[in-house]
Amino acid sequence: MDWSKWIRQAHRWLSIVFTVTVVANFATMAFGQPPAWVVYSPLPPLFLMLFSGLYMFVLPYIAKGRGVQRVNG
Image (cartoon, rainbow, N blue to C red; front, side):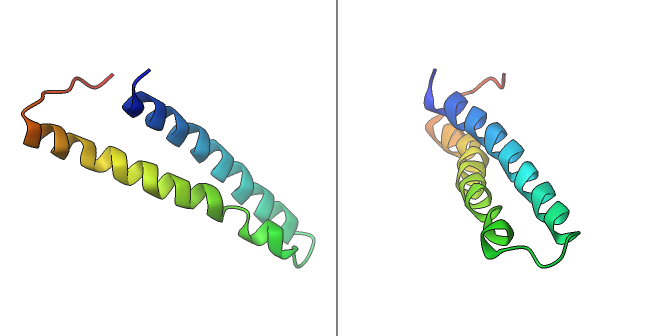
């Protein structure tokens, strides 16, 4: 498995973790003020998704600059 596929898969799993933490955040808000660790729990997966998303965004431009034609899939 090359780096691009590994990062894409990690990005998908991080999005699931992020979604679960946001849902848990809203669920705990229904019972009052949630603890700080619940409020800030979506941030680590969000920042990791930022970096992996930026990598996937610039990847086609890097390949175009090298003259490599990549096939999505």
